[in-house]
Length: 117
Length: 112
Image (tube, rainbow over all chains, first blue to last red):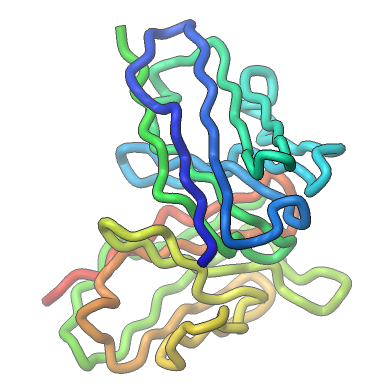
């Protein structure tokens, strides 16, 4: 069974950094592009970015590119999202997804991030 | 960036009815391979988000046949025939033709 499990969320202060992890199982992680998506408390979905199966290429939403970094460790079947200089508008649930060019076919249960002083 | 508009924020229906959810793109989602890069997702409380449809009309594995994707160019529809109790959820469209990929605002199916 395909499973994606995010962790690392929580309450953080504005300007801080936070790193989310997503552990994958049930499929050959190193064969798949992966992506991060976030959902605001108002239920708006926003694509953050994605990473090639071997980690050699990343692509980001322009509005987040300077503060968010996606990486992966295929040996650990783990995807990461490094968030820096977080703002109140980064408050959201963060999902990792396995990704083909045409569909995000598996999603995790999400990690909740709240940015507040 | 490509904007996706799901006009209806909520739709109230009764079980057994047919419902259509529309998604309009600000530009054509047709790629040179002849396929549309538009997919649909279902989000139910307490469950992981589920991919229903890709390439506008292809059901993912295990998705019931009552879910039907249609449309082309900039206009797309997700129809659900004979709505079941488990279908009351939020539905999103997503375009992956051009980065940054973008979602519709979501349409919530609610019990009438």
